[in-house]
Image (cartoon, rainbow, N blue to C red; front, side, top):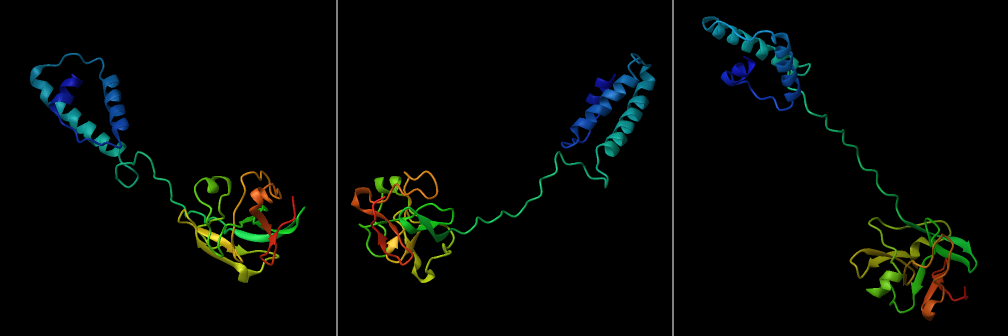
Length: 203
């Protein structure tokens, strides 16, 4: 009987409320499960009444508190992304004396093959000696001379921090803040003092 109702009457399709429409049909089946036959001359009015009732139930049960169809899931509220803290350089104590490090204490190095203010470490060199780059201006921290801190275009296209004449690099062999394992490597890599001069003291 209810399959006849579903075939004969076309109900609007509520995509967000499919679950509640299904519940209405199941409830109607349970309530009228004992009805198997009905005189033909009375079937059409009964079907029409049932269809009208189900339509009203669908409109009420499948709408939100303001009469709108409920959303499948409320979209999460967007939150403003927190900016990354600016990268900084500072001076810290080490076994080599007071040297230039980044804001987290990682040692910074200069490459003697670089030209003043211009980095030349590229390709395989960058794999071992990553440049100190940042999408935001690098700031001068405690013990540094702010006038010495500038930046230049790195070979990768990013902005590389420069201190005095020297573009700044990390060494991948330094595992922890304060490590100076890159000092003197190949006779070309050295730490920097606060005045921008190279520190050539052996590690």
